[in-house]
Length: 187
Image (cartoon, rainbow, N blue to C red; front, side, top):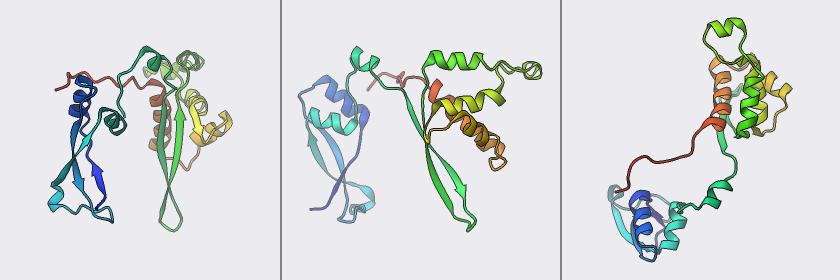
């Protein structure tokens, strides 16, 4: 029997599960061969699999949240990659993980780095040169960086301006990204 890969249809399937928690939901299943390659003609659907509401939850990773779920949510984790170009012209993808700071600590860190007079005239609200390394160190998870290491990394001549600003952008993102809330009504 060929291996099957379930096609996720989050919106409709999740809504069906919410409307009828005990109902089975049909999701299309793409046929794949033993090697995992698509064995159907141009990806057409080869059949359907019936899923219980419990199985649907596992497939869609979607649940109806409770207050306890929301308040016990762990701090946001953000994973990205830094690409290193090697001397032999190959590249190495290095995984980096940042974890959000407590919002009060983030605000206090921002306040501790006011802009210089020149930066203020440029419309900046903080001193990025001192704030960025502090923030990168504070949110670094893997690898965990000290302020000295983050400063060395942020000021390294091996990082182009865009790469350096990218590190800072990732650090800001993990702290400032909002809760994922869809603003459209389900079908």
